[in-house]
Length: 122
Image 1 (spheres, rainbow, N blue to C red):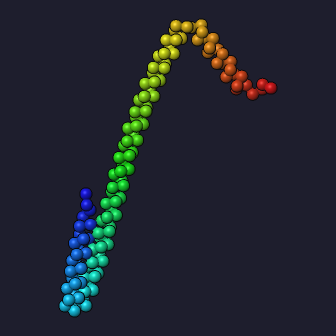
Image 2: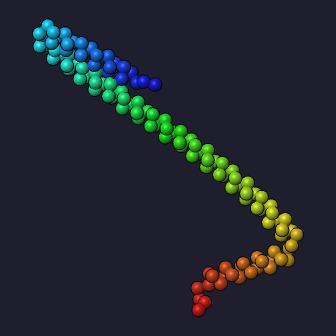
Image 3: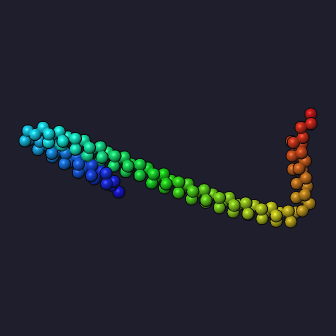
């Protein structure tokens, strides 16, 4: 999408060039100077429109990348929660299948954590 400032700027630039050329041909310094001023204003407006187009394009690309990152994060969250549900279910089945072994493992893990946390140990 082309910004309207680019279109009007190009039109003013062309009009200024024509007016300046006519002023040069007729020897009218006033028309020549006005044409150069109009040409410069048209070029400035055209550049302003180009800058707006560039900013708009960069913003659209940033929005696109943000949407992709959001989709990826949502997929990762879904995969993680699915893995957590499956892991919890598997641990539950193992504990139900081997209750004494699970109790012994939990006790050993607790004892090990207690040793790590105990600051009075020398």
